[in-house]
Amino acid sequence: MIQLGISSTALRETMGAGEAAALLGVSRWLIYEMVKRQQIPCVRAGKRVLFRRVALDAWMDAQERGSVDAEPEAPMERGVIRRLK
Image (cartoon, rainbow, N blue to C red; front, top):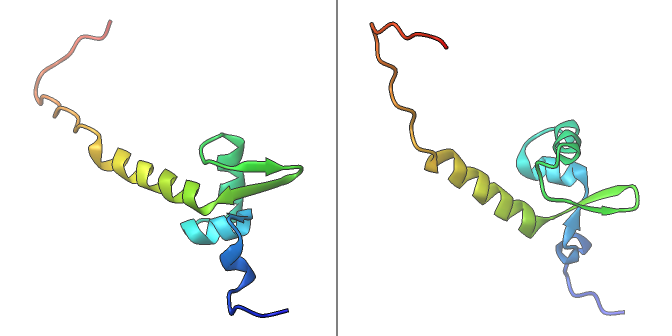
């Protein structure tokens, strides 16, 4: 068999929760919580939860855009008493 000098991780399109956590800079526990809350894109293969790097990159881009595209809240008026209904 001829070795091409490419590591097996370079050929894989998916990664486990630990690798996804390392990529995002968060804990594996948080990754599992986000999966449970359906807050992060993933693929289930039996009991395993897998993540595609392309999907995580797109998800991070969307999260980043959402954090800066949000319109700023109007400043609260000071000194005005508001009535609660």
